[in-house]
Length: 436
Image 1 (spheres, one colour):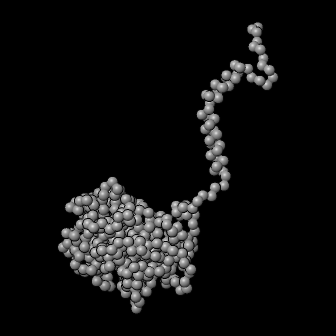
Image 2: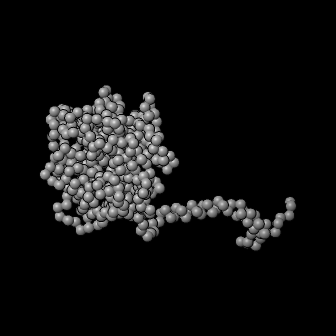
Image 3: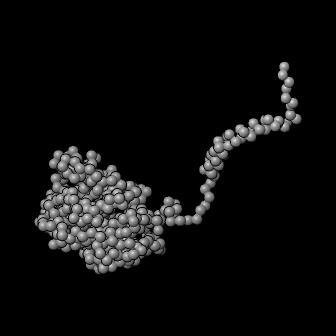
């Protein structure tokens, strides 16, 4: 038999074995390190979190919502010199676009203020012959940073037709009209808000046709776009139209109904907004003279009938428009118009900013005449809490949010833009809003 290598001393490896072990360590070091990192990672996940310094973003996820009675709104004027500003939207680059009734669009940036010259001029297309006609709504395309496309709603020359169009911000001569609704008889009740939902579809509000008492009985008529909020797909063209109707719109298969309709039974939804958190609609519907109302419609409530002109708010308005077996959706908040300083609900939006995390999830609205600040928030029981939390500057016409979700409000005839923030206060007695 071959002679054996001398055995090492007990417990000590030979030089040959040491070299082999070193080679193995070098060969498998990455795997060993990876295993170690995995162990450290698992240990970190299992250990209690280490407290960190509070930040706005951290507070957003952990700060409890303050009771509405402990909040108040404070407004700071940041720009003036606007000519009847009526719509407001934020851009990804930090600017705010402000639509003026005559058809011009101005830009505001917190760092540089209000630009002297309009960034878009559509005055040659706009019918401004009535107090409620003009450029009505504006919103950027979801891919605006790449395309520069804006969607606008306005009353068009020569007869005030309600018009939805898109236009590159730097090429006003390239307006493409997408959809129109005749509106020649009366100049009021045009609606006009436009907004994109989280679903990528465009929503557009139209009034009932004007005058008073719903003369065309539009609110309950699914055969007209008047008195409705529409939902369309502007990213495709279908059947010769420059848009498509989403397959899950509620009246796609209803004989005689316009398939673009999302909700109906509205009088003059001058301002609505879409909460990016759940794609629900918050609608301020202007009343006839008795009630002003706020509606909240979740995606599961598509096709909701909000009542006009069978009802104004919850009170019956015209019994001839109330059909047996038709389910009506109540407003979540309504307040008195008659014999008060109130005159017209100005729908706002849900606060999703980070500066005041305890106010997140709160819907804010106002009234054109009284300027009261209405706050509404869903509660854990399936209902809503509401409160009056101060006032806004004179003649509020529209609310908007910047790229960070912070709020702004426009003032009509003074031509102001004001930034809105929340503060905590001691609750005041009797600050609630009537909920019917």
